[in-house]
Structures are given as structure tokens and as C-alpha cells.
Length: 450
Image (cartoon, rainbow, N blue to C red; front, side):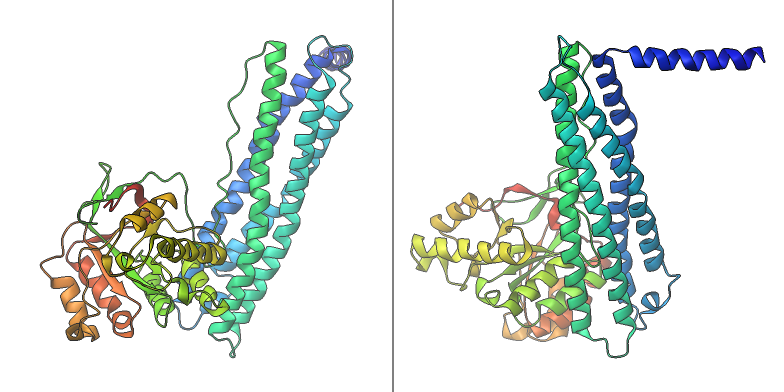
């Protein structure tokens, strides 16, 4: 009984002390609760959702290689398990939403009129940041309900006998579009976390307290079904040699026995099929695009599909003119207009430029640099030569030429015979001990300079 009474007295004393605490201590206490519990819980939940999205991309692409599409028909398959995990995580955001609303209200109602160090603007800034976070979390939760509904309907559509290529591409486009809307809220969450940290550090500085480091941000470059991922913080492992355009190691852990695959003149007739073949082979590549092929909506759809399969998109000018045979003004139009069309289609500008015929001019190099593109040519290519416009002959020369070596930059084109030869080329390169370089690991510094 004595222990029980002492416990009651202790709790009562704590409540009284809390009620009599200074406004400064109350504000600090709310900040600590946010930084130690609410913010870590929020970032962990959102990051877990994004990690599952990235996993879904791999599961989705792997499931498409099964002609029976059995994973889409089995509600116990990894695809549906992934959906269920994300559903639970999204539903769990309700608690975080309520916590953030309470935090915003606590700062809103804080009376600092008698404080010598804090002012109304400081606590209102904290309240506004917490309130916006609450709204963003609610938007993610409601948006994710639509995402999950869309993905489920998409998977269901692939079960039907009448499902065809358009069913796949249209479904992917719809799912990816909804994902993009949710991803915008991820970015806003990062921004509000940073804002709250700045405001809380302002309060701590005024009170002579130790400030905190910025909150860990979620990685907002998420993957949707069949989508591409790019980690903007990935350290580059390679660079483009200015003299040879070969891809050379720029870090100790880079595999030197590696080559780069590039496809020019895309997306004409064969690029989409080539992208799917490379994806099935887990073979990264750069697709260099001509603007004339992506003026139409059909062309833009082809480019989006290639990009959503995870491939890097490069600029190959609009009309495929020789850069030394046109004016600097026309050169600018050829390059910049193509970059604009690429950005319109996939939401980002190209990072690599290749001049038609490998012929650059002072203007083409200057404009590419102004557009923040790395200029590269190639080591070798054969598929435009009459003797190699047949899959067997082409795959043989691409794998057995004496020009093949570490860092080789392999040139191929959007051609039917090249498309057919790709599996033998990729497998032949790997059988010779070469790995394939992911363009995302190539540094933007380097490349052709004259």
C-alpha cells in the first residue's frame, strides 16, 4: 500500500510540475517529442513504403517474363504480398497524422507572451510546419488508397484472355501517373521536416540549447510498377575518356572489365522491343534519341516505355544532321529542341549527348556542355554495314572483334537485325568475362571536349 501511495504522489507531483512549467520548457518538450518519436516514425514509415515500391518494380518485371503470368493470377504471390504490406503501412499513417495534428495544436496554443526569449512567430512557424506535415501525410494516405486500387485493377486486367500489349502499357502509364502524384507529397514531407528542424533550431538557439542535425530525409525517387529508379546520391564509378569515349574507372571499386551498351536512332521501329529484351537480360544501356521520332504522342509513349523500363535516355539531335555542316544556330535547335522533347516525355533532361556520325563541332560541344550533357562517341559498331545486317554475323563481330576490351563503348542502332542479335551479344560479352556498365554510374565530368 505504501508503494502504491508513493507512486500516486510522484505522478501527481509530475503533473503539477508540468502544469507550472515555463512556456519555454513546454515548447522544448514538444520539440523533443517531435524529434525523438514523431519524425523518426514518419520517415521510417514513408521510407518503408518507398522500399516496397522499389521491390515491386523488380517483382513486376520478373513476373512479366513468365508467359503464364501466374503471379498476377495468384493472390498469394509476392506481387500481392507486396501490395498488402504497403496497404498496412499506408493505413498505419493514420496514427502519425493524428500525432502531427496534436503537435501543431500544441504549438498553436502555446502562450509565449511572457517569455523573454521566445516570440509568437517562432511557435507559429513550428505549428505551421507540423500542420503541413499532417496534411501531407493525409494526402499520402488517401493517395495511396488510389495507388493500391489502381495496381490491383492493373494486375486483374493482365489475367484476362483478351489482355494484350496495350493492356500492359496503358496500365503501367495509369499506375505510374498516380505514383507521381503521391511522390510529390513525399517531397513536400522532406521539405516540411527540414523547415521544422530550422524553426526548432531557431528556438533552441534563442534558449541556449544545443541544436540538432537535420532530420533524415526519405528517398523520394521511388519506383512504381515497371518504373525506373535513380538514386541521385550514387557515387559515380566511371568517367568518359575524352580521347576515345571509352568508359574508364573513376573509383577503386569500379569493375575495369566492363563495357557500355548504347543504342542510337531511337525510338524508331525496334527500340521498345530492344529495351524489353535488355531488361529481361538485366543489361543496362543508353538509348540515344532523335527528336524527329518523339514529336508525336506515339513516339513519346515509346520513349516513356523505354525510360520506365529503367534505361538512360541520351540526346542524338533532332534530324541526325552532320554537326559540321550546319550553322551554330541550327545546331542549337537540333540539340536543345530534342532535349525539350525528351523532358516533355519523361520529365527529365538527358545527361549524355552523341553527335550523328560521331562528328562534333565547336558549337555542338559548347551547347551540350551548356545543357549539362556529357559528350561521347563510341569504340566500335558494325550494324550499319551490309555484311553485318544479319543477326548471326552481327553478334559474332560484336563479341569477337579485336576492338573489344575493357571500357569499350559499343554502338548499335534501332534496327531489326540488331534487335534479334541482342541476346547473343549480351550473353557473348558476359561469357568473355565482361560486365555491363550502368550509365547511372558514369560521372558527368569527362567526355569529348573538341
